[in-house]
Length: 123
Image (tube, rainbow, N blue to C red; front, side, top):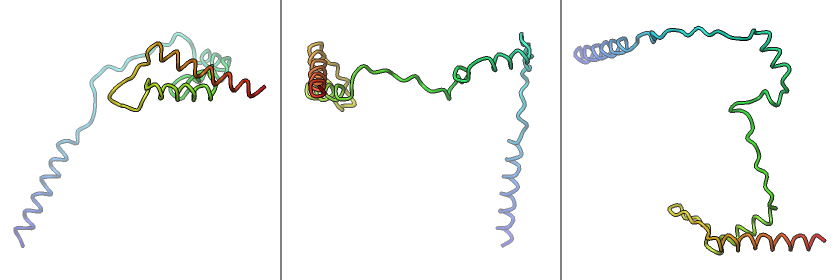
């Protein structure tokens, strides 16, 4: 019983010593840069107040520009179905398929055909 207590005490002391060896202060010996501004604080505040709120919000949190599409939803769906039918696109992860110029023209023509049909039905 006495040996178990002695071993446990030795382990606790050794772990405490190990932790103390790694617990050193994290200081760096790099010089601190001294920044000099060319404008005053009042000029910065005046500039921020003069700028519109939409233009002042740059950075990571700003919204990404939205891509403007000239194609309708039905035209995109028709072109996708035609590309799948021709085998120009697929779900193979290991292989990238590129449509030939003839296939690209067939895909575009299918989109225009569906668009013309949609316009004719609307009239």
